[in-house]
Every structure is written in structure tokens, then in C-alpha cells.
Length: 121
Image (cartoon, rainbow, N blue to C red):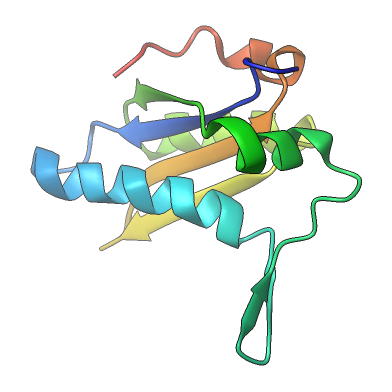
């Protein structure tokens, strides 16, 4: 598991947004991918990693990511559905009706193998 647990971020290059704005959405997706798995208790954010060794390792050791590209809402929705069907956590970033970025995982390489066909950004 050590150096291969990663988060896959997918950017939708079919949006009309400039590269800087899309880059911000990529960063939002990565952060949301973690925050969506935690909860606020009063003024404290809590992320329980018990039972999820991949998330625990990623948070403690690596923050490794791969940023990939896709084109259009349909492609993005298909990628998100594939991840969810495999039991992998997915976070979605949308703005102005565009699905701009996804965060998949963090997860182990076997779980992420199905996304090897996505071209790197």
C-alpha cells in the first residue's frame, strides 16, 4: 500500500472556464474528497479513518494524486458512476451547470486500476 495509495482527480476540459478557474476546481475536488468523508462536531472537524486504511495512509503519509482529463458531463458522470459502483468515494464539483471536476478516492491501486485509461492532464 505504501507509496501507491492515491486520489484521482478528473477535470472536465469541455467547460468554458479559463485554465486558472478550472485549476481552482481541481483543488476544490481534492479537498472536498476528504472533507466529504468527515463531519463537524460543534467547532471541530473530525475525520474517522478507522476501517479505511487507504484513507488513513493517504492522510498521514502521502497526499499522492493523479490529475486526469475528460470531456463533457456525460464522460464525467460515467467516471463517477464507475467509481461509486466499485465502492470508491467520489466528490463532485459543479459550477454554473457544469460538472467541472471529480475526486475519486483516495484508494489502493487495485481499486483505481479501472481508471488507467483516463489521460493525464
